[in-house]
Length: 305
Ligand SMILES: NC(=O)c1ccc[n+]([C@@H]2O[C@H](COP(=O)([O-])OP(=O)(O)OC[C@H]3O[C@@H](n4cnc5c(N)ncnc54)[C@H](O)[C@@H]3O)[C@@H](O)[C@H]2O)c1
Image (cartoon, rainbow, N blue to C red; front, side, top):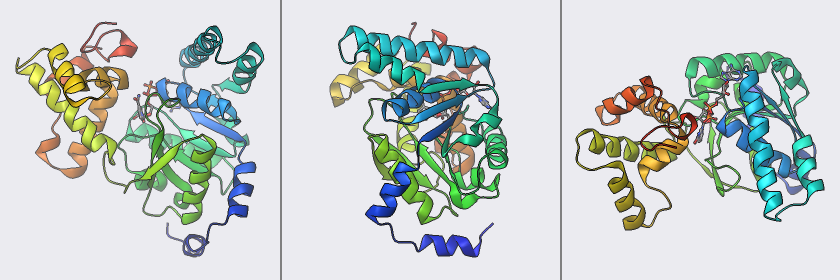
């Protein structure tokens, strides 16, 4: 819903003092979804000084998230990158909850659930009911319309996409996606959030796949077509792309890291969103996902883990 408030807020000029106030009042970060991204961003946020609450409908996912973070911290400890006190501080700053109502205490929320529009809209509608008026609700979606997610709430002006990339602790930049009704005030709050997390950002328009996945997932899909057609083995495709273009990983290794279910969901969202056959998902990708080959997280994708 477009309100007069939206137009007024959008004219507010950011100032250093306002920005500092916003940053200081932004202490409690709620995260919905404790999967690969939720746990990764949750750890980064705790390291960056946030008090973090990670919520998930699955107890197993929460347990797994806690173990993953704890193992990573033990690794840092072993390498001498942090001491025991710091390691305990980072972990104790994160709580793990199944009850979404507990997120009512959050100053800002990042949704990190499965890449499914219906599921995400349900989450946004619930967050809108639970969270204080005025707080910013962000989505880590890789492809889904922020305007659509905002429409599930009564505060579309406070909804924005912030896509952290995997691994969030290491990647320097995030993609920021304002929806059609997102106000400038929300964008400024999101910028302060990103700054507190120690990241740089790029702003993208709210179009399916935004910038990163429109490019990356098409490359991955084409690489999968090459495998399907028997043109080359996954190792050969990744080797020529990695060493030939001097990029850290080949497209199929990246796909396994992202999760083949995520990759398929993004390609399908772009296929529907643009109604353009150039985004048709490769049948081999669909078959792998149906068969439970989800990449690194399931132990099998284009490689065996
Ligand atoms: N994995 C990546 O490389 C990557 C990169 C950038 C963005 N993303 C995006 O981040 C989001 C999460 O991806 P992921 O890889 O962490 O997925 P994942 O499958 O690892 O985790 C998703 C989690 O969401 C939980 N969940 C599902 N419905 C829920 C609900 N209604 N309430 C609470 N929890 C719920 C699941 O139990 C699961 O633990 C997706 O939108 C994805 O597109 C992922």
